[in-house]
Length: 99
Image 1 (cartoon, one colour):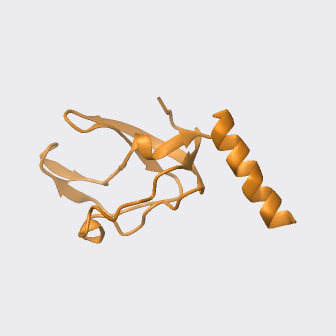
Image 2 (image 1 turned 180 degrees about the vertical axis):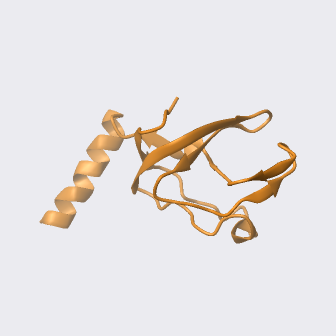
């Protein structure tokens, strides 16, 4: 599981199944972008979620925690950057940029 300070790459930025996503999130991660884990949370019934250094969203009321919290992203939308598949993909992106 991720920990604060870990570099992660977004592997799933498809939020199309949530038509009202911008009612909760003002900023979303982008596929293949690298982010830094700011904090991880565990919410019963929802699993692990992470907050990112590069993305900040205003707090919203979350019924499961009965309070105002910054909405976090499901951890399975990300891969640890040291994952060989993620690193290989990131290197391919860098080659395209610098070619």
